Every structure is written in C-alpha cells, then in structure tokens.
Amino acid sequence: MTKKVLAIDFGDSEGRAIVAELKGGKIALEEIERFNNTPVTLMGTTYWDVLRLFHHVKNCLLKAKPYEVESVAVDTWGADFALLDRDGVLQGNPVHYRDKRTTGMVDYTTRTEIERERLYEITGTEIMEKNSLFQIESLQLNHDSHIEGASELLFMPDLFNYLLSGVDCTEPSIASTSQLLDAHTKQWSWEIIDDIELDTPQLPGIVPSGTVLGRLLPDICTEMGIEPMDVIAGCGHDAQCAVAAVPTAEKDFLYVVCGTWSLIGTELDEPLINEDTLARNLSNETGFEGRTTLLRNIIGLWLIQESRRQWKREGSEFTFAALEKLAAESEPLKCFIDPTAPEFTAAGDLPRRIREYCEFTGQYVPKTVGEVVRCIYDSIAMKYREVKAEIEQVTGKKYPTLYLVGGGAKDAELCQAAANACGIPVTAGPAEATAYGNAAIQFIAKGDIDGLDKAREVIRESEELKRFEPENCELWEEGFRRFMEVTVEAEDKE
Image (cartoon, rainbow, N blue to C red; front, side):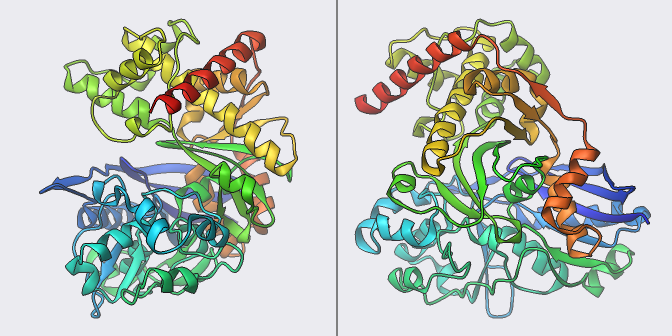
C-alpha cells in the first residue's frame, strides 16, 4: 500500500519541501517547493526571518495538497531558538548563530559559571560559541528584554511544530545541540541550568524523536484549504535526519554529512565521554532511537558557497558545477588551509582570507578561482582524514569505508579527494539524505517501517550510490603530512 509524507527541510541558505512515497519497499522523493532562507541584518544583529519562513511552510502545505500526504515533519539547523511570552506569542525574530553576540561567551561561561571539563562531562557536546547555552548566557549578561520577558524557549524545529500543531515540546536530537542536555539521561541538566541561573524562559518538555504531536491546527487547514494531517516531531536536527539515512548495513561505520557544515562521525550505543574525546572536542549528539553520534563539526561547503558569493559581488557568477570543473583542472595538493580556523567562519571575502592564510604559512598562494576551490577541496578532505584518525583512536575501531551523504555527495571532486586523503573507499549518496531521513522517521512513527535499521535498508534500495576508490595514495599521504605541518604551524603562530 502506498504511503506519502511531507518533509520540510530548512538549511542555512534555503529550504525545501519534499513529498516522500513509500511503495514496494522503496522511498521515492519529489521536490515540490524550494525557497531562500536568507538571514537579515538589522542594526548590527543578524536574524532569521522566521515569519517569512513560516509563510513558506504554509505554502509547502498547499503545494502538497494534491499528494494527500498523511503527515508532516520539519527539520532545521541546530542551536538557534525562539522566545515566547506567557501568551505563546513570539518575542522578536530568532537570532542567527553566526551573530557576534556570543563572542567570548565560552571563556566567560567556563571561567565564571561552570568548568569546561564539567560542562563536557555532562553534555558530551563539542564546546562552540554558537551553542544555545552561550547564546542564552549572552542574553542574560546583557539583560536582554526579550529573554527577561520570555516564558518559554523553543528551538527552531520546535517553533515550527508549535505553529503547526499548537504543541510546545522538543525532542533529543535538536536538544542535544544546546549544550544543556545531559548526554546520559537525555533530559535537561539541572546542574547547568542552576549554574547559569536560568530562571526564565522555561525549557520545553522532551518527547522521543518520532512522536506524533497531534493534528494540523484547524485555522491553518481553513486558511490553506487543506485536509488535516499529523504533525510529527521527527529528528528536528537536520544532521540527525541525514545520519538516519546513511545507507549502511554495518553496525560500526564512519560517515560524513556534507553540507554547509561537514559532520564526520560514527554511531554508538552510548555516549563516549572522557579526557581523550574532550581533548579532541568530539561531540556526542543524540540521534534517532536514542543512539549516540560521536562526531566533529567542521566547516564544509560554506567555504565554497561564501567564496562563490564573493566572486558574484566582484562581477563573476559561477555555477557550482563550473567551480568543480575549474578545481578539477587545477593541480591538487599545492596549498592547504585549516577549515576550522576562526578566520573562515564569518561571511565576506573568503578567497582573500584563503590567500592570506597561505601566504602567512609560507605556502603557494592560489591565484585563480580554480586554485582557490582546489585548495578548499583538498583541505576539507585532509580534515576528514585527521578526524577519522581521532575517532578510530578513541573508539579503538577501524572503518573500511567512508559514507558521504548530503549535498557534497553530488560533488565528484570532493568525494574523490576524500577517498584519496582517507585512503579508503567513499560511498557517496544519497545527496538528499536529510529528506530521506526525515521521511523515514515519519514512516517509522506511523508504523510503516520497522525501525532505523530497516529504514537504512529501504534507503539503500531506493538510491543509486556511487563509489570512489582511493588514488595516488603515496602522494596524498605526503600531502597529509604537509597539511598537518601547515595547520599546526599556523596555530602556533597565532
């Protein structure tokens, strides 16, 4: 019997709606809507245009009307949140995680509120300024009127669920990006909440990922002329939707979710929190069925995306396919950057910063567009290799294949570079991993697929995967040695 659901996926730069049909043991995806998700900077603060985004959500529901979908689930990026007053009314637009308000907040919090080691021991989460904890601390420290007048905090997917269903709650995958969730109990850490003196707003109640929250609000059905459907709190964090779609049959596997960010990690039954994982800043995030994903966040295709925007500002517009071709025509391994270096996180002239980094570290300075993109590909791939070695060391396991899912799976140059750098085959796909995972979790919630392992089997049968074998291994081994020398030297100089 055919089943259909609607997956609404918000990325950093755009959103889309995809109808997923389960039929004959396979899932078929059809994109029905795509829209921009452009943040707005106003008087020095960068916001998400959340009312416009919800307008797009309603339009997605309207576009899905002919398909007679049974349910809808929303996933978004992590860490950011909205504040509601006691009447459930939105307190301003949510602020973007790249906003400068959290600058210095990690140092402040771990110096005055809770020790870094204890914070990691509880949450197991990579300590980054963008995490919700440090955003909240910034608001409290500056006596922000929105947080002082707020009754409840909702993370971004939870906000959309609330606006669709009227139910205010969260689930573990998005909550684990906050640095407020106890990694072992999957509940809020009252020790951290007490330490930062968070009295208001209240944090939402936590329900299991895949919970059916209720039906679409009657007002929305009337306004859009659509039939009621279930609203499901799937995995609200888009990265965990993508991990759910990794097409592996193995229990122990290594994956990269490659989009604006690259998340490289493995899946474990329990959190792995010790001095080694802290030293490597590895993050224990919660995935579907309560599984733990041990991972590192590194900058991914943001480097390409923002460089492309800079070239457009300079009058040269390139498609991503054209940039890939220019990179393929450029000599590999001539220069490297550290993708995690702070100078590459902010918007602006990234090609200039890449050249400055190469000059600062005494390397060849890329001159052409193709050389800059080649440098980005090689550097991201080398970072995968570095983190792969760290994960293998802390888990005591070896991983024979790297599964690369998400938008980067369409980029053959990046996939081949990853195989070359890591010295193992790369299985690429699905590119629409987030949509597959979002939909599969809905089908599991509705009883149409029997659990996560079965869902991965269904996705394997649904998608044509590509395999990239490592090439020129000795050359890339030498390149990795130089990459490590360069990045360590740059860190020491700073």
